[in-house]
Image 1 (cartoon, helix red, strand yellow):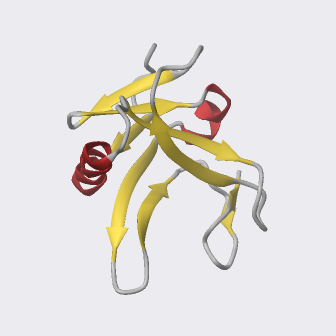
Image 2 (tube, rainbow, N blue to C red; image 1 turned 120 degrees about the vertical axis):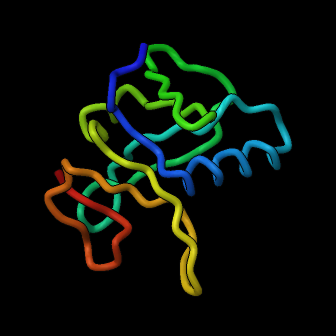
Length: 112
């Protein structure tokens, strides 16, 4: 099952997902995105390899890659954009989430 506009990917994010899948030691279908309760603001994004589709997961196919959405994270991710940013000090996936009400000072966690 897929929810329209659950999450979209920028070209940079899709390219990075393709790169990560290609260099994986084991066969993977895509990346799994979820939300975990931690950090100073209460929640943080979790990104990991998806070796299989889990029960009740939504699958978003965008720009040639699959993103598996943890069912407990759907309400927190709805309408988000997943980007990949790389500069001199940081590289990683960044989420532009319209549901966020604020972030901690370091930017590692958020609250809804």
